[in-house]
Structures are given as structure tokens and as C-alpha cells.
Image 1 (spheres, rainbow, N blue to C red):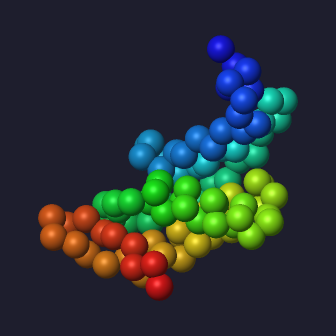
Image 2 (tube, one colour; image 1 turned 90 degrees about the vertical axis):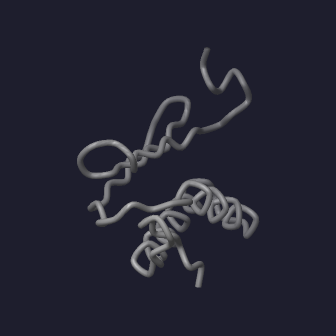
Length: 96
């Protein structure tokens, strides 16, 4: 079943847990956009939640979906570089 038959205009596929360089893909009905990054060292927790919240916040601020994803990804990347080591050796975002 096609995702747009369910009412979605797009789907964001996150690629952070796969092997190699992480890539996120924003899929529309007839096109897609790909963002690739260099993998940062460490085991992170909460990136998907942070990304979805950042995207939602940017949509609420009137940004279009593509721009909201770009800004959300940039926010999460900045926070990853400032991540705090939590018990168990996992890094969490400080949201500063």
C-alpha cells in the first residue's frame, strides 16, 4: 500500500543506525531528497525524538516540510557535538 493512500504527503526515513555514512531520505509521492553526513563517534540516545520535535517546531513556525527537516537535522547535529555522557556509556543531547 502506498503511504500517500494513507494520507501522508511524505515520509522521512532515518538512516543513522545502518552501516556506513548515515543518510536520511525524505520521500514524496514522486520524488525524494537525500541528506548524508559523516558519522559522529559514540552511541547516542534520543536522536529520533529530538529530530521529530525539531521538525514539528519548525513546521509550527511556518517553515515548509523540506526546510523544517533541514533545520531539524542541523539542530540535532549541533546537539550531538555537545552531547553529554550518561550512565551506561550512552550520549544524550543537552538541548541547550
